[in-house]
Image 1 (cartoon, protein in one colour):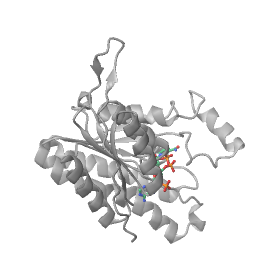
Image 2: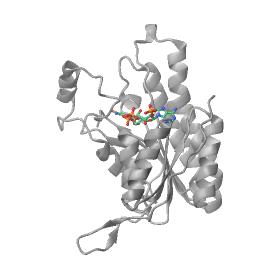
Image 3: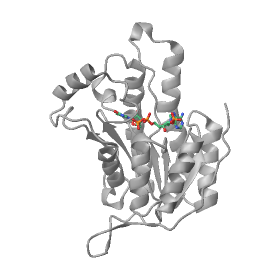
Length: 271
Ligand code: NAP
């Protein structure tokens, strides 16, 4: 496994949303959040929203340069952010990610397991390496990150873990046996860890997006898109921000009594 050395971007001042009267709302001030796969797509929207609400955010990604770029943008907008390059498929990288977060900010309040990949193909043509690659990132990566932060959160007696599952993990999706199995397993993992650590003040939830307009869905042909839209009552793909809003809620104290749940963000495609 290649080890990416953590790279730090200068910390900025914590922000926070203000209403028209200038009062702070939806406070995540003082919270430290790790977002994996945070340099683009849904992960970037989550990192941005958490930072806008006052959290100090670790933008973590395989793609070192993009993570640094995005963390720098947040900092120049007055938010608190650092970039840490980490591959969630590497146990060593995940340890480094959490250690760097602790050495920089001294705590971990929120973990968002967002990093995910696809290696699509019909079952009979699916190679074992494609099965293993997807499981290693989408499922074992989530297990690794959760295991790395749980002792810290348990000691703090508080923590919020939100993992990005998928509608494919709930409904299945032809051509995605590996992906849908990994995303269904994330739901099982979420419910189990929620039960194991509820008494320590840690909530563990999953968000299952439908089809969201990102690089992951960019390869869909016009024909497939049109067919998809017929299956979505709201007749549009979701935006990364649609998903980020659900994650930010689950990461906030407003969701203190919600654990072991799956939030569906899909324009009504699955209900
Ligand atoms: P995306 O645009 O492909 O972005 C994924 C990000 O994760 C990229 O920055 C990628 O880095 C990073 N990443 C990939 N493998 C990683 C690894 N091993 N370690 C660390 N980071 C890694 O995907 P997205 O559409 O935003 O999806 C985000 C999450 O939502 C995924 O878990 C996905 O399965 C889930 N989801 C997406 C949709 C959808 O319709 N888009 C629907 C349901 C669920 P690189 O840029 O270096 O590749």
